[in-house]
Length: 379
Image (cartoon, rainbow, N blue to C red):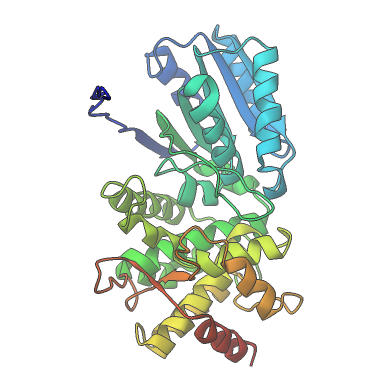
């Protein structure tokens, strides 16, 4: 005869946090922690990469120490190939060797790879410690600032291992955008265009009208301040409105994966020679053209998506070195795959997403249909 005991652990957790958008936000960060933003913290760990370390990591470390805070800086080699379990373990070992424990706060300073990796570390170190994100790239502002999804890449797939861990606050430093290589900035524009495609037709039109105010046709960054601020605000608002309804990606949040089924596969198959946004740009075009084939959007709408991506200086074609078979095989590692079938999320025209009869925002697409489309794209 067995005995049973029910463990009741129902609780309401408030994961709300503020996003501050502006230029030169280090003083604001210092004021926030002086004001008790992260109570009970005795040590701060700045996590950054080798590119951001001299520009923002070291100055923030000096500022923290000048204001009487105990802080250290931990950096890893810049680039998506470093976003791995091995890098996370090395950082954890460094934190432990410096006597960091549950009374610490992680400050992630950098782009999406930094906030993804540092957020995952914060979510598991000491079974979870508070974190702050200081976003220095458009990609981090567009994709990593809202939602709390963290993770690392493996040889099999990208971002398949991680946790949901919400930061206590996010700072989006628009001044940092001027330090970015043009290719990195364009990469962030892909996620911005994705947001317009999936949720806001007027924002899509705004980007069509204003893209020339942030990047010129010959590729130089212009970065009109008002336009940059509008882009940052719209990115945060669109992503927030999705995440608020589906924090843990049970259904609706899948729409933020627009362009990523093929895009993430391209990124991995290229050995990360393609930046994340470059791969997503091609993935958006594949999704749009597949959507035309399946009747979810018109050819004219798909061309508007491709044209805007091209004007942003982003690629819209599959690199010749990547075969259709290579791309197809890698798509089977996508996190939306169910019962061995590749699933896509699709635009419903421009500014909305297709919801299917079963209530889901993703739908399986047969391999033969995808292969046919890939062959058509190659012409």
